Image (cartoon, rainbow, N blue to C red; front, side, top):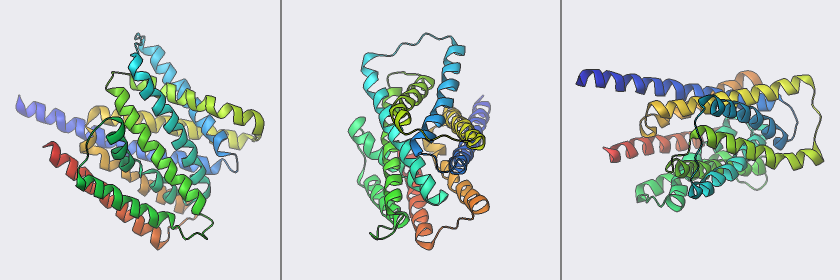
Length: 295
């Protein structure tokens, strides 16, 4: 009996890893389609990215035929996830259009470290001095990617990209808070995506930029890739705990670097590579540190 349970757990772990690597691939692919959509405004791209997610999430909720019951005290967390998630998406799209693909996604991957800080203020979870040091060192790694010389034309989009990572990290903290109230993940995805679309509409009414058929196809593929990534990552954490598999999410950098090189001819400079190594090293260290603490 124990051997059967062990085999089942191992199977779920392997499925979790596969789903998480799939999500990393789809999110890197999403970034490619964002870039290929051309010089459309970031907010316009974010709108179409989220429209697809709204439709898919709504379809899943309708198909489940389950009665939704959202506790009143859960709404601030749901709204916080939507607000900071929207900031994260728009800032990330802005950075992807103006930076190396790998640089933009690495700055967005600062989100787990800011999620640690967010958990302290939002979930009242304490973090150790060791975790605090890891966050600080990861931020130093982010500075190697940003290269804040004050003269670099990429400084502003890099700072916006970092802001996207901060927004995503806080959004994940609010998402965890909403989960403690038993709110279904598909509803949170739908609410966040619908909220993002509504936020984008006033800008689109005033500053809508027409697009051609090719750009429209890229926007649809961007939304489809983002939705595939979102549902893959949800399936990953359904099969295995985050503390066991979360480090595999950084395979997104491998996909992003490969796509950036083969499709756009992008090669990260030495300082960016140093930043990647620092950030990924801290992610690995926190992964093993948290797993050992759990044991």
